[in-house]
Image 1: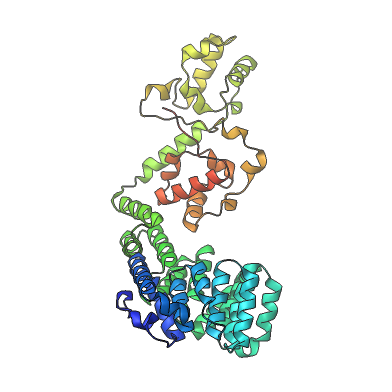
Image 2: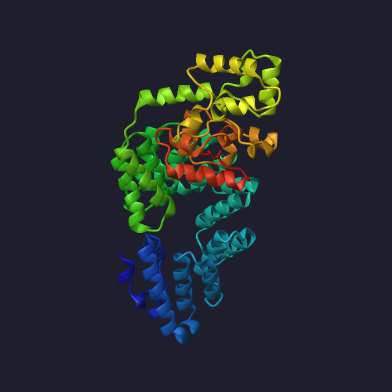
Length: 445
């Protein structure tokens, strides 16, 4: 049903409450995209303004106004209207939902308990309480609440979904997946169970099954942004660029200002026209490995070694950024030391000042002096602590970047050089590093 066609009289014009089915349809439609949200917001505000006196005196109309604001995700205004709507089961239920979304879990629990006392279905209340307790971190209480309804819940999809989430919260991933599968077997359209199962398969590396579950999430035709974005990542990783682009276009059709989707579609379209030279990539990788060889690996005289150390030249690549004149100008650095170094570079097909001669070359040293100031504990932490998306983590695995220290020694160009690594992943990584006061290595001309 189109939100624009939602009859104002149905929302506020009479004293007949919305059924749960009608309310669910309203929420589904309003949250279908930016256009629907804006249209409904305008309609609701105009209707409330015109019917201000009658709405304030009618508990049913106040409840409908609260339902409208809840559909828009405006939970504080929804609670304000609920205070005028009485204390029936629908009102208490919606209060619990609003408090839960606002993170006021103790108030949510009280509201759901009142909803049950006033006539709400006890099983539905139990599931709402389990989810609230899980979000609050009260896992033992949530487990106890599930046990109480296990007999009636064993044949209900929502029961197995909540049990799966609880197992996941406790680190029991395989048991969680089994419960999500059970939920889907009972209700093949249970979106949340499908999404959680798809995400779990993605984490375990079963991309084919993950794609299957994500596609099932979308069979309803609704714009499930997270499912579309994750599915697009998997399509792109498998070289199915047109399918990936179609997913992102669906997101942008509903949410034209979705920042991540706008960045991602540029990556995909670039990949569709990008030529990947595997042999060239291998040569570049080999060259970078050579330039990262520590000076300490070579047999140099004590004088040459000490001079290079004082000049902060630690890696073979550093020598390509200094000239013979600069080396000879350093105190105690003579022709003998210079010849030693030139022999080493010649053996590797390199020469002093090579990068300075090439105007298009960039600094290839491994360490950035600013990053050296960061404590060892932070630099040795695993990249998993950055809580990156699946796609970004896989790209870092391909580059063999396991710690934060490994990552900050990379440049943007080095990361973007990895196949399927685009601007979206780069933006995400830079933001996560920024949150920790870090950044990628900056190259100098």
